[in-house]
Image (cartoon, rainbow, N blue to C red; front, side, top):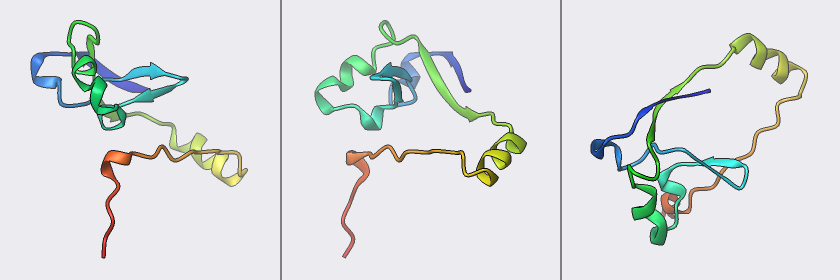
Length: 83
């Protein structure tokens, strides 16, 4: 569960959650040509507070049963070579 609050002009740098092809995106995953639309407080009226509430006992049961399938969502904007 993500916690959200009404979005204001101060919240346009990130945190807006939208459903896209069955998953949620944040601004770091938005192609440059769609960033201004993504920042719109008229189109996207809620802002992610980045709070995450989980049931740790339930997660422990899933991990112990090898039933927790997690995918890595790549963020090409944050990939850098080191060396």
